[in-house]
Image (tube, rainbow, N blue to C red):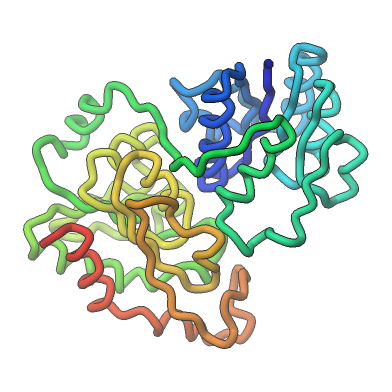
Length: 315
């Protein structure tokens, strides 16, 4: 069977869709994808992925696939993604309910009973059950090549280093204070590790040069970031896309949870670790603190993070 998948638009969600693809391939299906340009590098060497950057471009890609596939799986919960799969018109079209999109799908997975109550990997795996696949709970895994050149480019060859990803596009309610990450970085260096800060172009102004730390914020492509994660001894992150990508790259990950819920988006699998201290107001899933106090920032201490990292690094 030829299966077309409409992948999620964001790095973390796209990474957590990989176990579905692995299950489909294991079942003997041919899998191709339509995805946003920002996440396309994640799927290199895994499946062909036709990429778009605008909604119009997405619709055109779907139209060009009309009648070429037997089944379609829609990960995003948006109206436009289900409509796009309808344009491609495989006989079987599977997706979650919501946003009046069920009319475009032949198999609707009602998400009210499980959405945000189980890990998103496990929610995504429900999408292949209509294809008579009993999914295996696999960890996300990317296939990287030629990383050594990238590691040498950033002068990281032969070094033990910990990567730190302190930023979230979602909003400040997810972000542990930057000065805390800097303090943890200083302590990691005292354990004999180099420290690399990672982030997007949007984060460049947030972090000034720090003595003794390699600041690569805004200086790496997604593929370069993936290679750096693959060579890291560990990744310290907030609940963000890189925490999931780190798992897929084979890295031990420690994620800090503030306004969100680790039941839903903890780093998945045996290399994933997290710290979360629930307050009466959490998880609120808000971009900014509704009360303006950011009390959840105070629940995680620098020493707690360092001690957890020492266990993960086995030092």
